[in-house]
Amino acid sequence: MNSFVVAWRVSRRVPVSVIRAVAWLIAMFGWVRNAKPARRLEQNLHRVTGLEGRELRRLSRKGMASAARYYSEVLELPRMKGEVIDARVRVEGLEDVEWVLEREHGTVAVLGHSGNWDLIGAYAGRNIIKITSVAEVLEPREVYDEFVAFRESLGMQILGHEGGTTFRQLLRIAKSEHTLVCLLSDRDLSGHGVAVSMWGQQARVAPGPAALAQGARTALIPVSVHYERLSGARRRAAKSRWGIVMSFGDPLLPEDFTGSDKVETMTQAWAEPLSRGIAAHPEDWHMLQRFGWAEV
Image 1 (cartoon, rainbow, N blue to C red):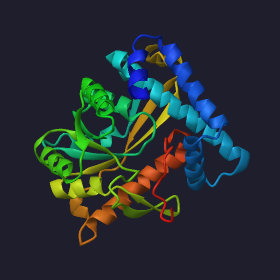
Image 2 (spheres, rainbow, N blue to C red):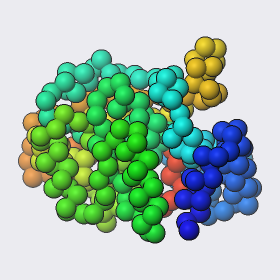
Image 3 (tube, helix red, strand yellow):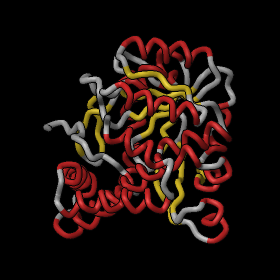
Image 4 (cartoon, one colour):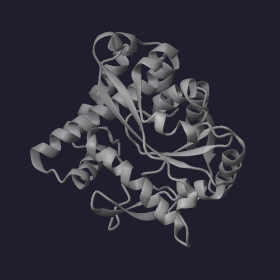
């Protein structure tokens, strides 16, 4: 049985404090040993910030702690009450995109691997709009099934990432359902990424969000996510020292992008605010894998 599935099932029977402590210890062990995920994170953070030496090591330690926080929160989420979810999430910029979200058809949101995207999905589904997303089909299949069942229990509609078939399903949903289609797209899994400028360097990101927005003739909203320290009444209500900030960027409208390269230009338009959000809170960018740097 996959180790994550074991952890998932065992976590339901142990105190939350134990889950958090074990996740933190595993992350710190990997950081001290300079394990491959920690090395990858450090390489990516260097490209974003330009930091080196001790400063980079300090930042990567914070990054590993943030990733541990994400995984422990995922294990905690199935038993988290709605009012706790609401207390943990703070939203910025919603008033500027409400006119888009009120449309009868779907809207596309593009996110990076920052903060806790499962937590904001649960919050948004409760308080803003129905969420539709895509999950990578993992092996063994039971891991994927566990993830899908978990996210659907939070009120999300989940599709498996299976190439063109999935895109056609998303296109139908975006045209016909009142939902926010959320796509994690800073890491390209298609092998056909779009080259964009991020942090003054060339990288390849997923073409899906822009292609979907163009195909469905609907708006594309960049969404940045990061952690923040909590205190006082909100900390007590959240049952945690940490909360999440979900920041909506300016909507990108398909009619503003024309020509044969409209998917490319729209992708660059969402990459810019997303890269600014990551640069502002690099410790919460959980890019522990190879990123699509142009020369890598």
